[in-house]
Image 1 (cartoon, rainbow over the protein chains, first blue to last red):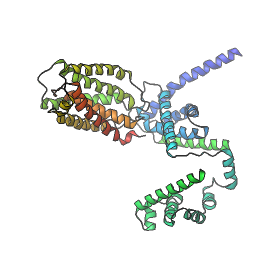
Image 2 (cartoon, rainbow over the protein chains, first blue to last red):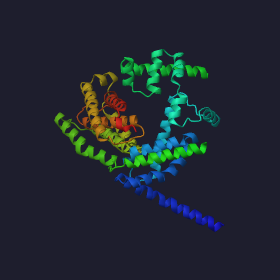
Image 3 (cartoon, helix red, strand yellow):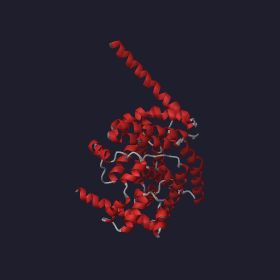
Image 4 (cartoon, chains in turn purple, orange):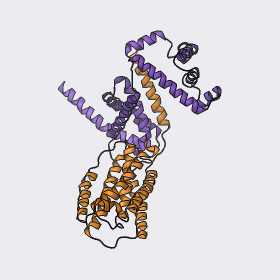
Length: 205
Length: 214
């Protein structure tokens, strides 16, 4: 048993010793334009990044952080110094992204994550919620939504908000439809969101 | 439910990796050390040397006249070492930079050997405005030049990196200008040179390169 354990430890050490140079070589190949090596590099980084992310953020945010880090790696890969090991470089990028995510969450004033019970409740209420067409038909009842928004906002503000944020129209298109300027639409939508947020905050107190 | 979320997220990560890999193309590595030293040795130091030669160097060279440019040169050197580190996403403190700081402080202490000035004399010295304008003006020009040259840097703290690059540009100008300026008093350094260095650092800290944000 002891022998088996020792052999297994040796083999794991060998694997980790082999892993880093492979990562470095793959990253250098990726910088030379090798797409296959780049994909392999990113995939081989994943277990390490996931392990690091678990230490930095909650489990429900872990995959978001890993994905943000992968995008950041793509943006800054040219700064990699091939005389240094890859892992501290990856860890530094992830730490930076974790701090950025924390700052963004802090700036949003409140970050409410849904617990399992809430998710189950939503699933029960909207069984087809993952289907985009069903989502359009069932969840977004525009008439009802407009009526609800009109209770809190001016009708024009509600109209601008629905057009840009629910229907997904551009600011320019909305401005044209409403006979207003794009700046007016931007300001109105911004104020409408602020009003709704304030009312929500008041209600949560 | 959790398992379903996890598999969905794994699928997203796989798609992301595939997309990122498709965008991979040949890109040269960014070597801040080589770029910064080349820019300094080939462009900025010869340029400043020529400009200062046209302006004229001072005629007398007591020990304090040597300590003044040495102070700014050592500060500039500190900044170079630190900038090389901070240009990367995992910027750390450079030990060489820390080693040079006491030497710069020593040069500053030597300036107390120069004939002392009062506060009003320091502010009313004939070249005060010229010193301030020269260092801040050329400091900003060099900052914007270096900002362009280092556009591929990806610092973790772009504003700090910008401020340090600005401080470096101003100390580089000051180290040359100090060979022209006849006033060596430590108080004059504090009243004329320090505000110029601070101004350049603040302005450059406020205007980092857009590409430094990643």
